[in-house]
Length: 447
Image (tube, rainbow, N blue to C red; front, side, top):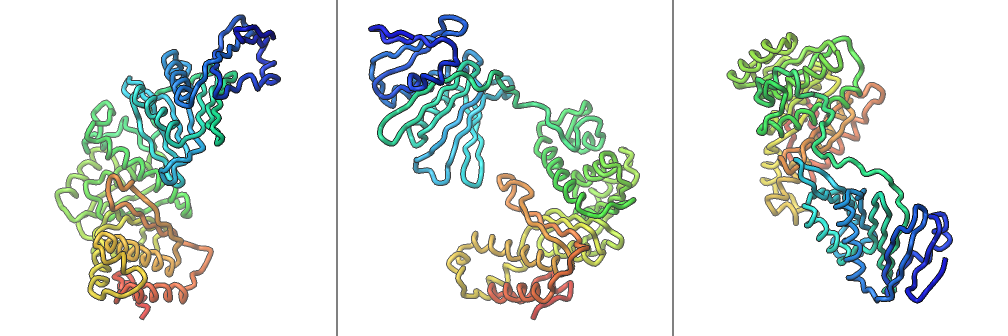
């Protein structure tokens, strides 16, 4: 290593870098340049031109841009956030390819959620620059040629450090890759007849959302079905099956993926949809899948192992839960909507409590009544020996009716029925509720 008036240093081999790590830290008084002089030699030039934070950020983002142009970009992260946006912690950036167009995908990590946004290359680089200037004190760029880190210290010192690469391969930018679906789109005649795919198995443009919803639904049920005792034959009822998108997919999954001897019945009030679905089931060769016309109340649920009711309106959800409990179903899955029965009572009684400052607003009252209605439903399921789960079924960007209530028969633990009844009674008193439709049906009125 030698030093001249040009202030350049030669470090022979990367192994020596650790011994001279201070040479890789450039504070406010100088800039850094690297040039390869031989296979194992790096020239490190210190230019005595002062660099302020803006210049250092520009140097960093120019390095990002260069790595994208020469296809050496691996990933980028921003951290140690000290800005004003609440709960924001990190930003992670990767290169993706969407319909043959290169973009930068930003994952904004908050305390309890992630938000992903995709930008053009130029817009993405501008976003990185803005983030470094407005709260993010640490930035790290990984390329296959080098790692570059930026740090904004509290004492107005700025470190720009360049190290040998920690990753030597560029990850695939493929974003539109084929995903592994529990229900594939190929060789599914029912998906063709339901106008979700064409005859080649390609998902139609107006069927994309429905196809994703079908697979999300099957992913949820596949996990739940594993929690119930295995049987040689499984009887399933889908209440309010509509056009049968989810009913067909469930039968397909049970019969053709899990190879379970299954009998699935879709219950639908509209005769034209019943006729259509039975025709498709026959054409598809789904011999143990059938649809019958009627209401949830009219259906004979005896012997049912799994009962499903998605988006049954208001007390129809209670009718479905009642059918499942009285049938001794191992699994009950409902996604309620239109919680009117409880809301009418809450509005009529206008009980004064600690939450009345919220419930005086219609939108808050609606949400509160939804939670109270479904919460009591879960308690009643527990009273009758079910383990319960309540979770989001569909992201609320697609529909506000997105809560799924699940009951799984508990064969190991007996419920504390007195305690459960006391909880139901307390909830009704607090919110001014005379009765819940399901407890009235089940004969468990707590008053």
